[in-house]
Length: 419
Image (tube, rainbow, N blue to C red; front, side):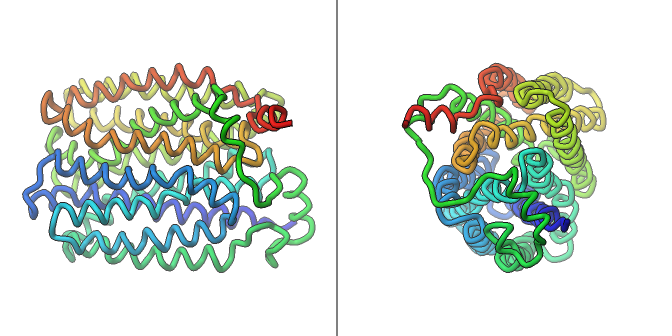
């Protein structure tokens, strides 16, 4: 049996890697942008929020487009769009122009993750979905591992604008690779032999043009709970993404070069634990552990550890002790992220793209709020208060996970109500 689906999982990893490289580049370049244009934390917070507003806006439409048109066209078009606006980030000289470009950049990235959930549903049987999701998530999280160091090197050699031009070109190449090689269904790919096609189709979600039963979904507590917990999880993660480089330089007095390495450590831990969570979760389900336990325990445990260790980071007395606790804190969310995306398939079934779009919409509402709320608290009360507040939000996510119930499919509930 060929293993083509896993080669495509690695390509999905690459697309996710580029997407988060493109996001973290702006955060790393923030000190230089602030210096050149005279912006303060609040202005940078609004620019970060402009990206997440566009990104959140396209989550639900992105899931619907992926279910109707398929992942091949939606992923390729999304990557091409955001890559153009990545390059254009270097062009505007006004606040309004830069905010517009960042918003349009976010709109371009919006559909890709719901579309990837559609790809996972069609290309991976149920026993491999958590591991497949870990490729999607780990690609996202390894971007900020290498992003700070690469961005700092390019900035020192060529200036901050070069970063956005170079990664815009990289994104165009990645979009071509996805469209050229990843077909809509396994049976359409010449790289998949009969044995792999039969294996995938025996346990994967059937494709087809369909729209989710939104009225039934909106009446589901599970549907709202998976959105709320992801709002919290993404809020915490986007605080790291938007502010970690500046926080390390301002609050912990790291130089630009040392910040590039210190900012990478939490993301490296997050990437590693996301892969580990996917492996353990699939093994648990294969061994007969209920999806409710496998996903819910991971989801809750990740948020609880994050809450405690992020508070330790806020009160740490030494810079590298602070980095240690930040690393454990963000890393622990790998268990929650993996459980979240696997649960989209568990409860969404054929409508996993729409459920993922809904979940990621609320996650990116957290992304809209995280930069500006953190900027306001840090400006008004200091960085310690901002980090402490972020740690406490994790408790809301813990409460929401209790109601997700991944072993109960809202697709089946919705179809019964419709029948």
